[in-house]
Image 1 (cartoon, rainbow, N blue to C red):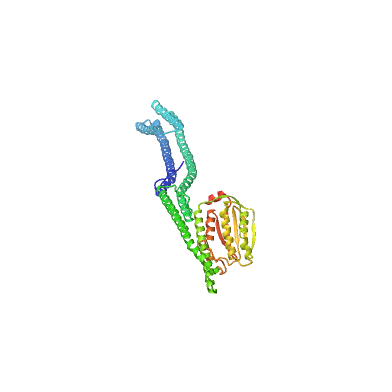
Image 2 (image 1 turned 90 degrees about the vertical axis):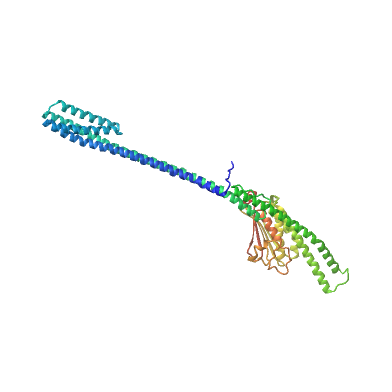
Length: 481
């Protein structure tokens, strides 16, 4: 399923922050609810238990007061003691009713009912029997039992408090466990959301960056299509408009070079034929100075023709810059063919080739690889001294095929190593004996290396030492793209 981007990049950022923050807010809310519930339960349980305990202790104290007034009435039989007893009994009954209205355990309710029953029996006994020592003795036994029951009620209340505390402790443990597992579930969720929105945010940026890089590398064939928010899509459309504009300008430049080169060939041909006629003496004998002038004219016409042909070749390279006729190629055979094609030039200058090539295959354009090696070998022959040695190597280094060409010429100064790959650039330290070129050979090599998603570097050495690395497999080159 394709993700539907919002209209603007800012909206995407806000949406990402909101969704990533949502689990955190939920976790905080859940924790707040859990701890609020725990606090409420704690308050209710403790308050109820304390009230029951306070009432139970009050009931114990009232039993003592009730016993004192009852025994005084049993001994003296006077009305004031009976009134005091009745007042204490009223208070005692009120406390029992308060306890009965509270949230009591089953054991506490049974104990409260027993206390009420015993107190009722004591009251009936006081009402039936006249004051006497026998009544006092019976009251002592009865109140001892009532006091015991009241103390039992206090003990039960303390037990209820302990049970409430234990329940609260268990509830706290459960709440802590639920919070822990919530956090355990939240962390990967948040990480997943962050990773997802990081990809969604970075994806259109990477597409824009790749599009700009392709424009900078002169790769105009591939359409620039940006997937993302509306403003990023519009930016992609503008970049694609720029790509089409650059394609148009490149075509105009190529046509201009072709036209101007063609137009220059006609007067150049006449100039060369005229210089040949002068040199051959067809129009009359020439003295030494005139022969020298005719020779200069002829050599410069040849040089100008080479420059024009270089312009045509360079425009052809740009026209084919987006095309790669790739297949599995044995690079050793290609390198051997290039050396054989240059054998006459090598023999003419007594230059020896140290050929060291392994059996290396690569998914590449055979003709463009041949052109790269031919240009490098041509430069090596041009700048090598008489009876020099040129080294040609082909080997593999992990997933790359490596091609090296080195000579014993003057080399390339460090400040010029980046410039030599520019079109029409010529080195400043070339020897006077070297044949002048168009300055396009290394530029073409660079174009073809980039087309293969490889790289070319100039190594230190006594002479010029070029090393080309290209991916050996199609997947590696596509990944590099």
